Image (tube, rainbow, N blue to C red):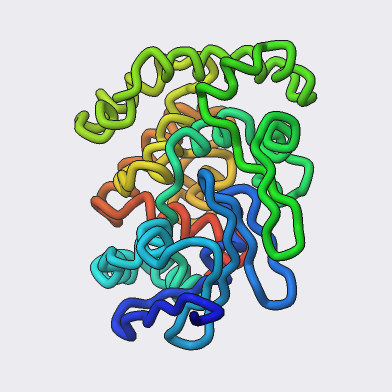
Length: 287
């Protein structure tokens, strides 16, 4: 039996594992001795890239291919982004970065509880909840904890959830778990809904505002037209696309509307990818 599973990457489909996992789009990934370790749903696995090959252990290749969206043709994304001066620069800087296909439940809770600035820490709220309420898995000589499913959360109870030191988020997470347990088909409903209806379904969860719903659609439902405008994206567009157009007295809502219009015109159906690439190039956006 082979020590590692191997996926041969398509040389015509750019993929960079390090760029994909180091950008902070998903929690609980860390690198040790050239291997990336991650916990996704009930799987713990390690993975590294050697040229056009992915070596992994702990999850089957089909699962890994789906998680990293290896079947997605990224070239039309690059064609569209490269028609924009800043988009082209972002592509050059992040070539091979892919938006992951995250588990919807984990992504929902991560986006509900994450700080405004993306953090890469061993003490984030997802990690604290998992360590207290998640199933332990021993892998590669280390201990890992999967993130508890909605049923596990409800069965553990609110007091146990609050013991994870997650402040008021405990109440919102418990309500979300109960809502999902009452409607096991919630993911299918979101997947099949038109964009604004999908936003509405997610916004019915307490603690999920419009922008958070957009992040969830982008990272867990492959809705690449999602374009959640946060402070980072607002600054990038204000300094590059809208320089001199708005004074400091203009409200963010008006600026955000202009930003969405530009993103729609310049990046079309791939504006969610543009957002991720621009975000990860934010320190170098001066041309």
